[in-house]
Length: 613
Image (cartoon, rainbow, N blue to C red):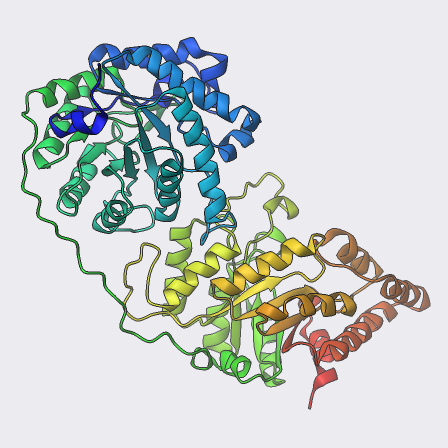
């Protein structure tokens, strides 16, 4: 009979198994399949994988349930089978393990971003982990393996969820970048200290990197905790050969590094992606030659670098920010970057606006998901060559968090100070229907990130020295179909650090009034979007094809009547409607952003002149 796992671990070096997913892939399961669901639809195949590791002599088999949470299963249509998939995964491993091998319930990340980086709350994440953990306990696991986590918030929710349902041992593993830190730049000592504090029984790293990089991380981890340490590297970085991912580390190489992990102080070893029973056989051969590791643990955790710098006051961030902070009415005009490299027209427009007293130019990022010059470069040119303030729109589409952090550190260094954070349009709304979108986080998560930078910390909680001083703006949609959802998101943005908001184009003033009344409890300066309609067709497009924009029937009738009166009359009517709208919202908001359709800045200025002193 098996001893309790932690009792066995106290006197032994423990070997976990290798990759389950890679072995299923090697047996012909397409990568777009739901590997976890095979526990139900093809249990013999899963048994075969477990049996291969059992045969070479591992101490622990991990269940085939890494992605068996509600969010990942939902993408394959198997959410309703969550409990059975997890229970079956545990029972299959238990069946092959017998009485002398332990079974670890494998739980991986949810596959979504949770707060503060995404809209899913911590409690929602905890509930998702809890239902998976409960099913694994029902299936008969001996311990839990929380693996391949990059977000400390998320692994903490997984730890709490397991503790909600049982007191079985928990192995908690973070994943690494090639530089040996966590995916958000978190130093190994930092995440080790947190996992130790939160009560993980075993702490370590797995996946993403090969044996060499992981050894450096293990050397740092063992100095930061007295708890047992685990290391489970990939079999190197995969190479694509004729359409299949091939891992190049030999079994002998993996065995050599397993020995080094133990000599460094690790008590548990195993393998992750690309490792096979042959790799584990070599690891076991190397490890079994070693006596149980005896080591004196020197706890050394770098002192947390508390930022001594003062966050920059709003009024000191930029001239535009100073006016916002003072409660003055601000004016801005939206100008799209060019569809090429010729900036002469848009720079001339910016110069014209500066000469006529406009406070700032808004520069959209991938407007309507079309291909244009990057707004950051145009913003820099405008500020340096024209001397007008810019509000840089920065969207989350097609960028990951680390890339966004790098961009925004660079943008601040070159002098940009005002930013409008938006989630972004999917590219299928634009000119490239075959393009794909990547949304690592939404506007709420990015606002949280910029707020951290403004307080002197990066994503991993490391000091960046002098903080950034961005004036943080966000988008808002008074005409949202689901207004309750929009209001909830608006409040989250404010809580994340938003300092002003710019609305979608406003045509229905009553709609705006309703929105403003409902955000009184979390009000920040609101700048109303104003769009001078160019034609009846333009009005129809805005009303029917731009999400969140409602053009009232009376305005549609006015544009229709102008179209019938005379050529060019609809443009003048559009400007008049925009001027009237601006006057109606003047005392409700703290500024306006007027769009310049087709880059015609004179039309935008005609609208702004309605409130000129």
